[in-house]
Length: 570
Image (cartoon, rainbow, N blue to C red; front, top):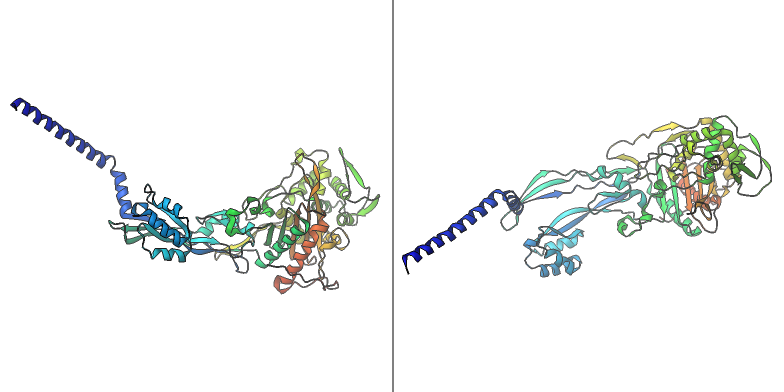
């Protein structure tokens, strides 16, 4: 071999070594300069791991301390697929112990693109403990809490529910989420080269959520739900709503909706059943709204309960002719009779005496067209046509509860103001949070004590000899009003087959303790509030009067009490 060829080969070899060295140098510079941060984080994650320690969610109690929503201990099983040696074998063991699908578990354990996967979220602690004894590589366990509703379907629309991450998703669980959730803690786990934990450093201590005490009474709530269930079945109705309200404090003792649902299985339930219709849904109130018209006329001193009017069977308002529900001849009725017999013509006559402007003012004064402010998310303000948009016939529709949409809680609050000597109190579901005091709710006067007394006396006649006789409660004076309202069809006209039947009452009328609203949507076989809703009111009132404070003293002991016992299944 010539010296020239030898030198060429040496130079070529040097060039190869030089190129290899240059590549290695550039690679090292890139790793240490550009990728240093990401590799540093990867190394840190392999030797340490920050874990969030969830805080215990607060318990929701009824007013007597009965648990309505609690936290149950659970264990979450997770895995680092990069540390799993035999995904198929481990998946078979995991699936057998935890009662899971082995193919799904195998897919998760074989996914080495991720350093963390859930195997079983919030699993049975006993099963997780059995699995932990198998010492399978790559598996990890940490305690969690899952939300549980021990009373099942009791007040489920009110309570709502919390999701898998223990955050409120609906109802009071949502609106009170900040108070209930608390603050999670954090800790850093230091690992050795094999990935085993060797030390734990706590960086932030968790703070458990606050307990919440409601105004609801679980016994009154259970009875109301049982009565509604019976009523919906009896009349083959679409749904029904009931509210039991303390007019003195604004505290809601029961807020029931039928059909109900079990909050423990909320993902399987149709969303329509989950709505708290008492707060979120509106309806045309029908004759129960006549209370506002009569109260306004009395307050403005345009009439007294004994003022009489000659009323024909029908009345002409703008381009419409409106008549009473039952055919009759021309009659003379007092204001008290207009209310007790639920005369449409009489209510419109009083509204015309008030005039459009004052009628609109009274509607606003009673709180319609805006939310009551109840501590529940998603409250509807109702639908009230602004006075500037009234047509000529509006003064013939609104006074009898048509052309206006209200929520059940608005109507119950309006009647509660009359029961509370004319003072409106904001309704509420939460009594206090944690160790705090009960909240004193805002209140203001709507009508004078004189007017409230007059209206209550007239409402007694509705039950004594008017349209609401089936609402009577033996041994007690009852004041209330029936309502029957046709629903609007898709074409904008009033239906001749779909109605909302309702009754709102105060009991005992001489010393009001309860305001009870019952509304039944689309009953079949009968449509009248006095036939469909009034008996349900009577059943709820009988039970509550016997239950509250060991029994409320009768204010009409001269009436029969032989049939005053009613027991509903829980």
